[in-house]
Image (cartoon, helix red, strand yellow):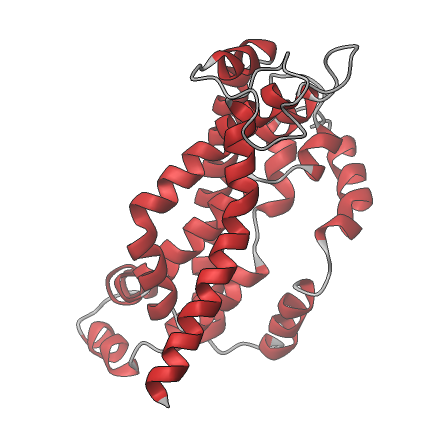
Length: 273
């Protein structure tokens, strides 16, 4: 029975994987089709050509070099600030006792129930009042704190044995030395998993950057890709758009394929099991 259950689970996983790969496969084929072939969109394999012409056209049609640089600055900047904040907040909620701690932590958790799109109006007003519109800081600002990350780190720190902290304190360590030498090494898998999730979320974020940016000097890849759909008087150039899509997703895909084992192990060791 246990063996049959495992086979059924593998079959379900295989079906899910196939459905997940279908849009990727279709996009990849479209990226290698001739834009002048009338049957290219109605037939799966019609118009295929072994050429990188569509990729070159997509790269030249938009400022992808600038978009790449902006995206890297934005996602890395958000990740660095988030790691500092969620580590300190998670450590405080896990190990310190102070008045109103439970109420404050509950407010953090309530933030998880508020969709980001519902906060676009207030966030836009705040960013505009600070004079930060059309800057990379404006894209990063709403994400410097993460309720999910704070909860994640709190749960991780609570699993560290108190005896290790007490031994460090007896040796004269201050709280930040305890955090650095005792808690952070134990929380490395959780931080790695959070880093991968944060990178993928903000690499693919589209709506907020579209609202607060207007020029290529601050726009990320997702906004640049949307500009490809507005080019041409004869309608969208689907071959070029598909090539642009692969230009956007390829770094994340390669990163996942390289670190997939560490990615899965990080989740298993970070308390989500």
